[in-house]
Image 1 (tube, rainbow, N blue to C red):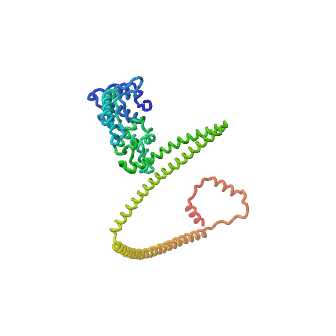
Image 2: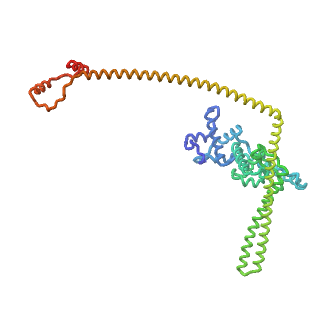
Image 3: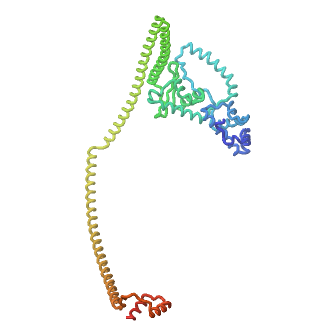
Amino acid sequence: MDRLKPDVWDDDTRMNVLFSPFREKDLNPSSWNQKMKFWIQIIEDEHKLTNKCIIEGKYLPQMFKRKGKIPTCIETVLSEMLSLGKIRKLQNCDILQPPSGSGRKGWLTWGYDTLVKSPISWGWKTLTKESSEEDNPRYILESCLNDQCSKVLERLQCQMYCDIVNSIMEYSEVYSQCGDLCSSELEFKVVIQQLVKERKAVISTEEDSVIIKFCSQNDDKVKNITGEDLKIFRIKKTSSALMSKMETLSFVGERLKKEAIQYRNKSMKQHSLRTFKQYKRVQDRISKLSNSIDLLDDILHRIGHAASEEMVVKAIESGAQALKGINEKNDLDKVSDVMDDLNQAMQDQEEIQSEISRIDHEEEESLEASLESLLLEDGKSAVGDQQVDGRKQASSEDELSDLLAGLKLPDVPTFSPGKSKEFSEMESQSEIFVPDLSPSDKLKRSKEAV
C-alpha cells in the first residue's frame, strides 16, 4: 500500500474516520458519499497497479493495513460497488474452459464421465462451494479487466505480421507471450474468456490442444475457425515439435562428442569410433530436421504471401469495377461536347480580356497626358516666381550700392599717431558713457555727417 499512499494517509484523525464502519447514509449523505468514493478509488488504483482484476474479499482489508489496523468498512464498499456494476462475482463461466469434446469420446469414456465422474464432482463442489465462497468471496473488477483485455489483444495484434498465419495459436503459446500482463494464470484465463465473450477471440480443440484465434487489427470481431486455420495450426505445431526435437538432439550430439574425445584420450579407439559414429548420425538427423523446419516455414511464408496477393487482387478488382462504372456514366460524345463548350468559353473569355485591356490602355494614355500638362503648368509658375524674386534681389542690391557710394569716409592715415593734447582731451571725453546706437540711427547720423 506504500506505493499508493493517498494524501490523507498520514492524518490519524481522518484515517480513523475512514477506517471505521459506515453510518447510516441518511444522517450525512455528503460525508457518506465522500468516504465511499475514497475507498472505491483506492481499491481500483491498487488493483490496476498490481495488474489484478480479481478482488479477494478475504484478503482485501489486509492490503490497506495501517499501523496495525485494518479497515472495517470493506464489506459495505464491496456491496456498493456490486450494486453500481463496478464489480461482479467470479463464476466458473468467467474462467476459460476448453470446449467440450464429448462427441469424440468413446462409449466407455462417455459413460464414465457422465455416470460416475460428473455426479461425484458435482456433489463435492456442492458441499464445499458454499463454505469456500463465504470464507473468501471473489469478484471481478470490471475496469481492470477491460484494461488487461486491451493490453493482451494489443500485444498479440502487434505480433501478427500475417493475419491468416499468426492469428491462430495454442493456449500455451499465448500464455508465454502475454502471461506477464496478469498476476496469475487464473486471471489470464478470465481475460481470455472475456475476449471470447466480446467476440475478440474464439477457442477450439485440436488433438488435445486448446487453440485460440484472435481478431486482427482491421476487424472488430473475430472470424470462426475454419479448416484452413486448422491446417495452418498443424503446420505450426509440427514445426514447433521438430524444433524442440532438434534442440534435444543437439544436447545429445554435444554429449556424444565429449564422450568420443574422452575415449580417444584414454586410448579406447573402438569406443571412440562407435561414439563418434553415433554423433555423426545425430548430426545427420539434426540436418534433416533443420531442412524440414525450413520447408514448413517456407510453406507458411508462401501462405501469408498468397493471402496478401489475394487481398491485392481483390483491391485491384474493386478498383477496376469502380472505374468501369464511372466510365459507363461518361459518354464519349458527351465528353466531346463538353470540351467544345469549354474551348468556346475560353475563347470568349480571351476576347473579353482583350477588350478590357484596350479600354484600360486608352484610359492610361489620357491620364498620362493630363499629368504632363499639369506638370508643365507647375513649371511655368515656378519660373515666373524665380524671375520676380531675382528682380527684387537686384533692386535691393542697387539701393545698397547707391547708399554706400554716398558715404564720405576719411582717408587712411600714413603716420603713427602720437599722444597730443587733442588726443588727451579725446581720451578724457571717451570715458564718458555713450549708449549704443541701433543700425538705423548709425545710418541716419552717417547721412547727417555727409
